[in-house]
Amino acid sequence: MKKLSARRRHPLAAVVVLLLALAATGGLYAAFAPASKAQADDTSQSLAIDEGKKLYAVGCASCHGTGGQGTSDGPSLVGVGAAAVDFQVGTGRMPAATSEGPQVVKKKNIYSQAEIDQLAAYIASLGAGPNVPTSEQYDPEGGDIAKGGELFRTNCAQCHNFTGKGGALTKGKFAPDLEGVDPRHIYEAMQTGPQNMPSFPDTTMSGQNKQDIIAYLNAVNSDETENPGGLELGGLGPVSEGLFAWIFGLGALVAVAVWVAARTAKAKKS
Image (cartoon, rainbow, N blue to C red; front, top):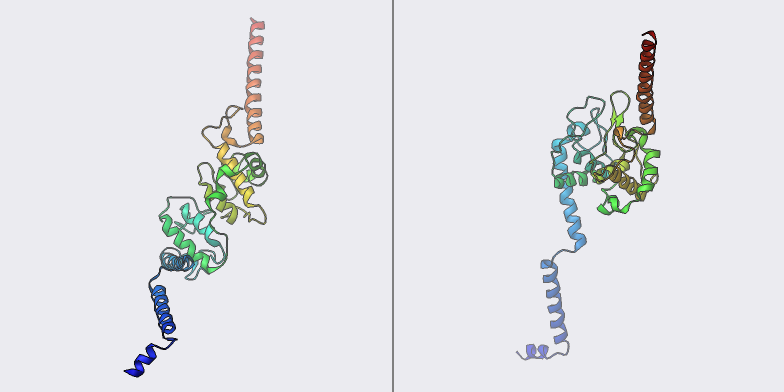
């Protein structure tokens, strides 16, 4: 007992007790404290990838391969990025109803947005690619309409026509109508170049330029936009609209001239 009492009265006894208390407190905190934001994000991402892999195995692997490597029925998905998945699945183009035909068409989406995000997370884990854009990137309010019009007429009007009404291409293919398309999907289409469309990565067309084009399309397809030229003729552009006016306008003038000449000749005979 005397030895124990002596140890308790040792000058370092209080320090030892304090250190043990701190160690116990730290251990309990580490065990029960909530995970850091980074740890939580990593865990959430891992769960999303796992769930996305399950969805992929059921709905995508038969065409694109069990590891996204591609098959004769579908291209490789390694490196396409989350943006391509969000566009293709979000617009209902994937899963495709058939591998036949000139082009996969837009249809009703069968996945929820949460499931699309999980599929995108899994595909993104296979290889680096374009990310899903943020709302600030594709918000039409952040774009320059005039600049967007110039860019659209230079890069897009050849297929989509001057106001994005779409048009026919070769061998049964077509450029879809862009009216009413979600701005996010337009941005992703420019990023990834789905099907017949060329891609416009940030190295070719900046994010701001993409936003300018979205602002232009939003303006020309708005219900509040009036056409100062009258009938828009589908927004096909000055060449098509001019040809229409030339053929039907000149044709009408010729018909009137023939009618007047016939009436004049008949009057002279009388």
